[in-house]
Length: 160
Image 1 (cartoon, rainbow, N blue to C red):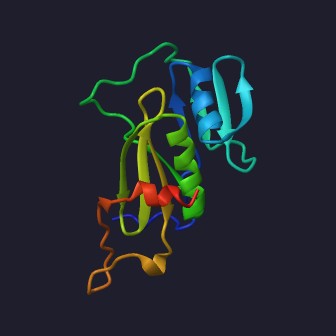
Image 2 (tube, helix red, strand yellow):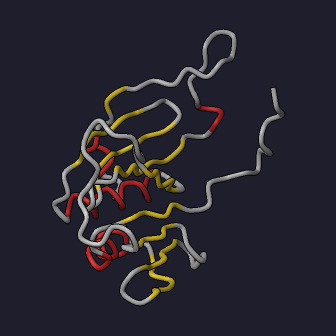
């Protein structure tokens, strides 16, 4: 067995093929609030939080006017956006609800609280926040014991 990856490793960005660049910028920037950092003409754009070069890449190079993959095919299940605290998560979910975007679900995983939805191209999106590691559920022998319980979205939204 190989040795584990360095614990400081993280996922830097996601790059999505989209059908309509302006529509996708409207969702990721106009609704979720990521800032547009750069455009490559009418075919690609890069967005981020906090001025980073990009957390999200969007392009129409091979997908302009395309359709989402059919159910039952492989591909990206969802992109997860980690918010620093419950209030920030509540603000993001409030933006989604105000825009009339339906939620696919919401879950309390014990280690995190998560809300699921779809972007305009049908890509799965998870908006979540982690609990402090000291609060993570554990078994008697100390192993992680994640759960999949319902999340009270209405209670979450009161913190927005």
